[in-house]
Length: 153
Image (cartoon, rainbow, N blue to C red; front, side, top):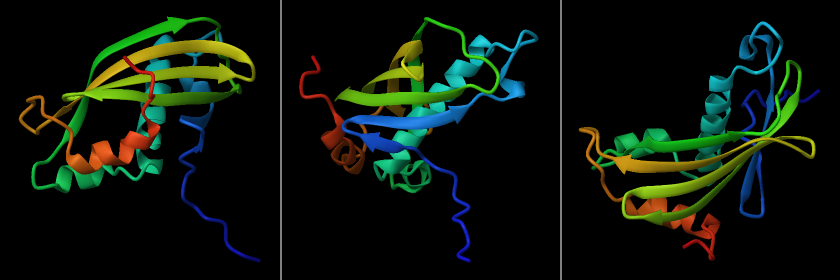
């Protein structure tokens, strides 16, 4: 019998959209069994990170670069539409829409089946390790270019 791959799933792409399955655990909920609002930001972060991972962008490599680069979220606007509850199977859906200078515009949704749980608009920026905004390294933009929206403003 072949051994299973112990590597956690980083989700998959469907078109431009990255889809990351997430299960709601007891630790994610409040005393009523509903996901605590701050945990949605965690799910969204996982979606953005795994998008990059599957697109061939490694946070470790970005930090080891000649000019180390990291990301910071400068704006996160979440619209909550329906509650998620313990044991729910959710999908975090992420698209990287465009890049302008150091800024990356990202759209995200969390769904349970056909039900929209929440949607978010995220503005992230590339920064140097001293916290200054910087343009993304050439390799990062090249890796993301196929995923950007052609209709983004």
